[in-house]
Length: 407
Image (cartoon, rainbow, N blue to C red):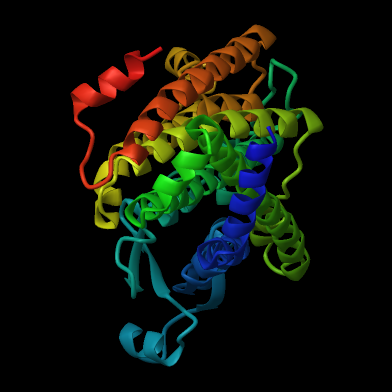
């Protein structure tokens, strides 16, 4: 075990001091901070792109302004434009569209002049329905609008969430954590492949294998990669939490929609953090031993991508399935796939955050992942030893099968 500790310490120090680790951690933190500002920025863009000037008789434009206020910013209501719509939009850069309202035989006619054709039609028509019905029936549009508003209160029968807002925030939290897990595995797994390939191609592997048991060497490398992955995750999660709070404070005086989206924090329960740590460790170890074994098969550094490429397929598949599980956490497919090793670290954790998962499912998933991690570590150790001992040529499938059959 002293050998494992020595190799672990050396490998861990080498990893955390490497430029790739430092740059990856810093770039990841900066990206998370920028993404935290994105919802508020998008909200501001959306608000700016829906600034209207209404043109028409005052009775029409005043009623229309009230109906459109929930989705649009009404810059002005005027009986007529002093110039052509094009010239008016060119002179008023903050206005994105001019809507001309007029009475017609069948009710209301609206002509729009906009910089982005097709962007306003659906929302504009929906908001003006009460005015259209009022003109054709004689009923006041305000009365019609009051009768067309439907109040919907959602209740979670599982008792997990008190309202829909909490459920939406939980999905956002789950998505953030799953993406962080994805990035940590992706960056560190690639680093493992590169480090193992470099050792082999530089003939360092021969010295290592001659003096250290390959199983201990592989274990130390995987543990060092896991520890460095935890450091990255901790820094990224801390950055996300601080950025969420900073964005909420910064946009506190801005539009309510922007403030609401920016103010979503990373509030998770200690139990959810525990499950995240467990599934992170199990998922990381499974992928780490596979990538280490793949790196040992590399004969040239240029071949790392072709050797490790197929291992990215289950990672990408897990991300896609996890997004499906965000919306339908208790769907039969999501439940079944949350037990599948290599996929379940992503899918099961997503289900844990957004729904109430039975304890037996969690225990079964953990047990299956532990068994798979041990089996993969054993198989990867055999392949790792074979690959590191063969210099100048890639092991054949027959040699790999023979190594796995050895006792």
